Length: 397
Image 1 (cartoon, one colour):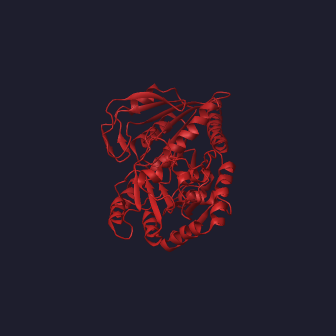
Image 2 (cartoon, rainbow, N blue to C red):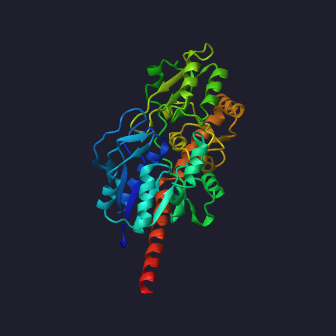
């Protein structure tokens, strides 16, 4: 192991420039950028998948992203973000042997394959399941069967399991991972980036100047609480709802489309496509940001909104809820009535609105990516040092 920088291998099902799979790719970029700046050497192995709709490029390529060397492997077959990459063994043979690997994702061929390679090559790795360790949403019984067989070794062979919140830690330990292996690293908030409303959102979507805007950013998917926001728009007749993100093909977009056609909400429900960069221009233009999910390991978009000084409402099932202190966000139960009432309160109470705007910025200043990177780097060094010590002990005996 190097005296200063570490050689770190990331394995992930998708990587930048993809933005179609939510916050994990954003979080990975923030983390890797800072690891590289600290003198670490980072390699990334991933697929060529960019989104749910287009066919991934069949040709492998190597690029530099955030200072890391990213190997995009030819992906002739895929299901959602799970890509078959036949050249994975060749790519692993070509990378410099890492001091530690980071398995960033679960139930996909790339992360499963790299974890198996690490166990064979005796490379220590940390496993970050990205909120997917608990089988839920689609094909739950199939996931449980595969977790007990094909994917069983991923968590068992990890030197540490990294999670984004205490909520996620509780979920993985409930499924059999020992407390001693779990590390709550958290995710960072962006640097506060001001609250000037200088965009063209209202003119672009035909929203009246005095109308209040409810904003959701993320995948249009089941379990995201979008139906609660549609109800808020129905009840609060002077508001407009803006939903920005890719269609995850869960059928939720059909609910949104029907709401756009209903007389009660016609002209007040708007959708925007995903962009290559975080939509920092949208947050300051909204009167309130809502992430009313049924389950989030963290919730990067809520952190982005808070850093913009936009009042934030999150459900108590979002991991990020535990990172807000009193007065920094409204944390509500995952219930339709509770979400609607919280939106109503924020939009009707100027003092509460101002308090949450200030509180979000305070949370962002307290929970920086620099501190998160400190924790992650400490985990790497602990894992790598422990493995090196075991190797020396074995050789001595």
